[in-house]
Image 1 (cartoon, helix red, strand yellow):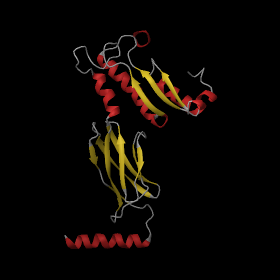
Image 2: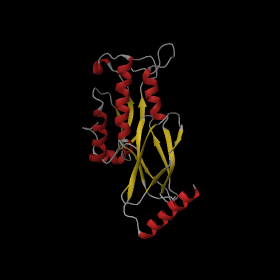
Image 3: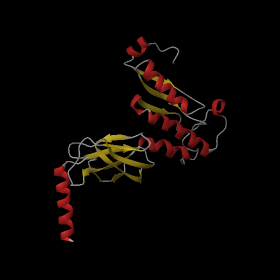
Image 4: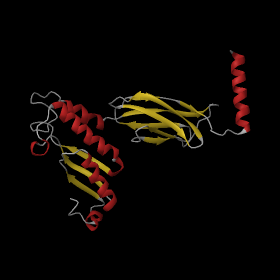
Length: 219
């Protein structure tokens, strides 16, 4: 596809390139996505992919198949801004099958499923006085998923199920983090964060002092 796809052709196709791509090295999928994004200003539709292909991958155990497919999907997920879709081939009756002949799920089935059933992490970000903070970055420590808070300090992050460290803040504010497990099937988790300005103004310091004073007095 790299050799035959000219810029003129890519433009004619509304800058979406469909590729059937069976690979031996999972990172090669990302190389192709980057190539078309940079050289043809196009997004990629992976119209056909599956593993293992015996002539390419050799024999794989069920666990090796699951691990390899997970690595390929993760590579595509990292490049999701330039990937419009993925078609996994095949459901059953083939070396790349997701189901056994009796209809039971192979390990790779759950791997593929998690990328189509992301979890949701939501919450609020406020300062130490309780004021909601807009436009604050909320991201995973691996840099794969990120979002920003809205005008009410709320955030809504969609992430592939996995163990993550959520990082909040930066810029003019301190940072906070939390480790959590993102569940699948659109399960929602709520995490609220409080951060402070790195260089607070005098009025902020006074209000913070009064808040602490009243809190101690009430206790």
